Amino acid sequence: MNAQNAVRRVEQFERALTRLSEAFAVPMDAPLALDGTIQRFEFTFELCWKAIKAVLELQIAGTTLGTARAVIKAAYAAGWIDDEPGWIELLDMRNASSHIYNETAARDIYHRIKLRLPLMERAGAALRKQLV
Image 1 (cartoon, rainbow, N blue to C red):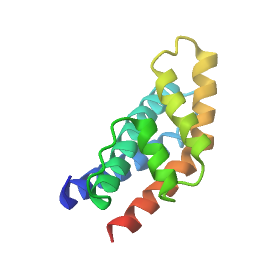
Image 2: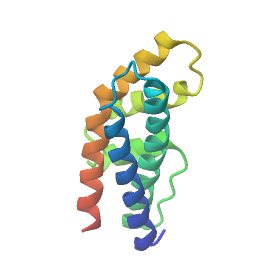
Image 3: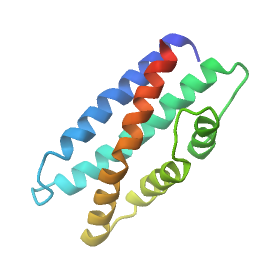
């Protein structure tokens, strides 16, 4: 991964994170707000862990990370994220969100995403620092 690609991935993640934050401004009882926010979370989380992966692989020559879980562990070890269990919960929520079939479960995921949003915001700031 070259520096230009890493910067591009971080920028894509930052845009998605902004859009996810905007989704929480829409009242949860509005049509599509619940589903739309969960979907935005799914792609924001994907862009997030892939941006972290790109920057880690750029900075640590010879490093190849394959899974989101491996990236989370490496980012925690590098000090870029400070709540490994919270990140594992984000990963679990991303995995579970594609299997939500009832509104109660969707509302639970929605609230948990909102609670964990600051983790991704801090990761964005940490990634920006690494790219300077």
